[in-house]
Length: 239
Image 1 (cartoon, rainbow, N blue to C red):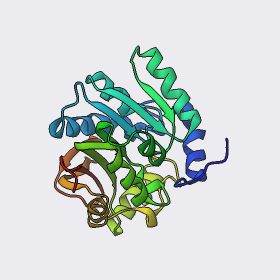
Image 2 (tube, helix red, strand yellow; image 1 turned 90 degrees about the horizontal axis):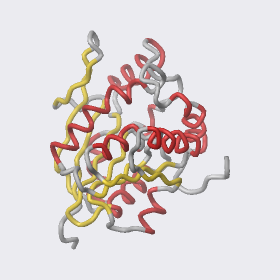
Image 3 (cartoon, rainbow, N blue to C red; image 1 turned 180 degrees about the vertical axis):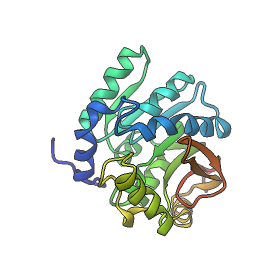
Image 4 (cartoon, rainbow, N blue to C red; image 1 turned 180 degrees about the horizontal axis):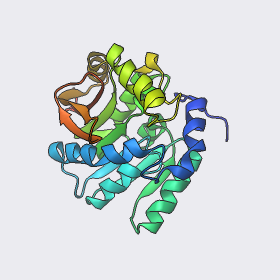
């Protein structure tokens, strides 16, 4: 892999690249993403128009959400810095006969290239994997057009999230590979909201992602104690 520069953790990229071939296995290491995807897509559809929207999925990985956006009628671009995951995404889109574009580029570089170009910007479960999440959030804000929407999901930082996301998911149930998460990089909702305001975004909504341990089904709720989603907006007329 070529040397990576900027707001990126090469070890994190390597970890996800090593699993790239199993990205579309619904029972494999990325099973939680497959199970979460319908809920995330429903949340996006509740708060923004998807059909006809120009959308960019930042940290798209193998393209699970990106493809869903395209199926809903969005003109979807997926970006990531993991080359093997992007190749899997391209091949799967080809097999699915979906018009999805993928690029190996950072959010910061794309924002410099195409500022204000997107109606819809998504960044799911990525902020806790980058060295400087505030820099990424600033790039997300610059990618959105005035009046556009930015959607992010991440993990809260508290004892409960440590127990659920690391001890439970990585060691007890082994639903995600060990080492996937680093507790110190988890982000409290108040910290994310503050960084969003600093980036020029307004908080429109926040929702918790809850799981029924018996059925393994996810649902939206008001409990943001572990996983949560935020809908942010770039003001229609920037000051």
